[in-house]
Image (cartoon, rainbow, N blue to C red; front, side):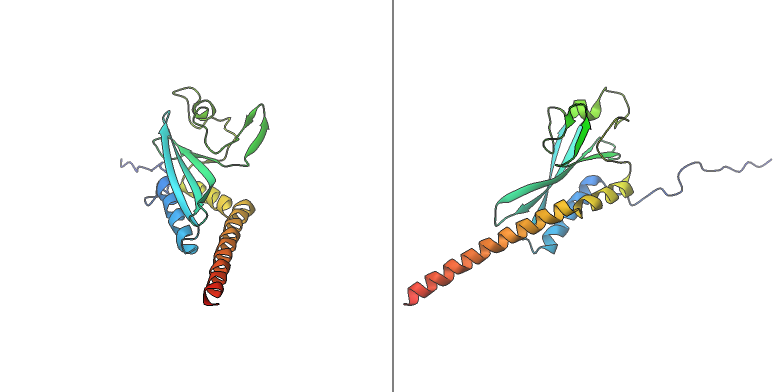
Amino acid sequence: MASTATSLWPSDIQLDARSPLSILEEQAELLANQTGGAIIGRVTTVVGDGLTAHRLDVFAPELNESRRIFTVIQRSDLYPVVLEWDGLRVTKDVITTKSMFQTETISERVLGEIGTSWPKSTEWRPIAANQAEFLEQLSKRMQSPAVKGLLDSLSAAINMKRKSANASRTTNLAVGSA
């Protein structure tokens, strides 16, 4: 009697999956290309307490100004990830996020007890279980009115600085030729 084995594994295993870090680095590069380098993305990584946090900031070199877009927190197995950004607030006990990444409280908020599943079932921040969910969450955040407003504000500030610099040069040229 011949036995036919049936695979119980997911049929949609993604063999071209990428790490959250590589996706963030790619998006940082794409922002720089899209803005001609006026606004660039910066990814920094912090490791500690069995977790890795990747921070994505936008930076305007002409203004020397940087703003955090979000932080992605993961363990060594890459997925799932927990996403965190300014403005993320909950009305559950005293838990609020005042900054993008607080190293002194990350263990309490995310890890909980060593050996338990991560993230905990009580996690209140967005969780992406896999690359597809991560890309969906990333897209929502990056295309949000808050991020669009931030990018527009940085762009306007850059334009004001350039206009002011051009006006100063024009005035200096006029004074020098008189």
